[in-house]
Image 1 (cartoon, one colour):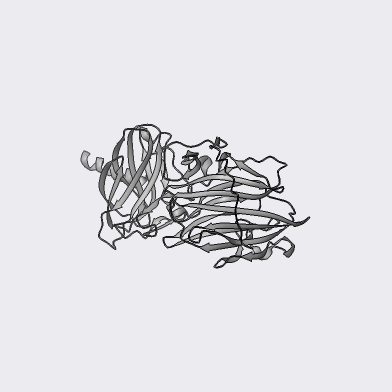
Image 2 (cartoon, rainbow, N blue to C red):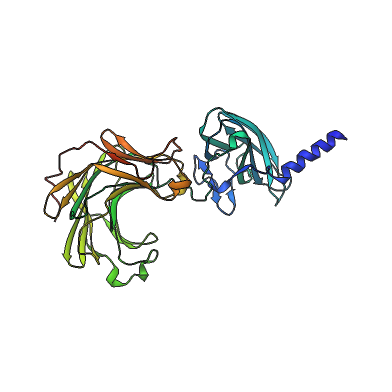
Length: 416
């Protein structure tokens, strides 16, 4: 009788869910490897349509207190159906067979794991079922025990790594007619945009769109406050295309402000230096033409990406910066890194000034959700990195100064 009562208590505890005070890491914050599309991850349902045992479900979190960590998952599985699962934490794996409860989620305990050191940990959930057999819908990873105390995870559905920026201080009265920057992509998963030359009206850089497509992108914002739909932007607030280079696509963009977008499909190479130049030419008191030029590594010449006439300007560039962005969250756990160097501006009077100081900043994701964001110096260049769940971080607003090159980019021959 005692044995039956004990088993009943255990069953009730499992069905009741995790203990009060346990940490719940939502399924919609998980990543999938090696195929990011091998299951579905959504804020509404967590991880669903998981039928391929080759696909692993991953969470990453920062453990601040070494010690024992009790691991479990809450999941939905058909009434009476079973699923064999393996959870790996801190080099230790445990396997269990879950039994479904129909529409009601069940909690599947994997037991205790010892975490010897503070730092980021990878939590790997695997299906040990036959291919095509549902592994179950994962609602959450549940952690308890001493090592769960003050553990830090991103608990939001946005899985992107934090966006990171270099901000270049420039004297307020300087009329910036040209902005030059060199950049090297070091680690470049798909859905990465490395931006070299940004200013108050646009941005210019290179992007990884897929395993077979990369782009050089130059965009200029419209005037006004419309953030989503360019069809709502009045003609007097629209930037106008003045010209573009051979093979360059030009059109509209929205959803992040609106404006004119252009790109050249080009498979730029990892580790190869790329050179970018933006010019600003006021045409009257209320309009400025902004042009983006890129040095083509194969042709060994500068080419125009595009030129745009921007209304409600009439001046030069301000707010100079560079950045790195992870624009697709499904692989926000991967490391992105680029180097930025040899930054120069040319004044309206024709004088070149080298920019050797930059200040670090990041988007709101980097404030509380993702702390794996960095700036620093490497081989005499600035670098930005984000993602990868790398320990440490760079403080918002921290400044770095690189060694001066003292070699202005003279002799630039731009196309007509």
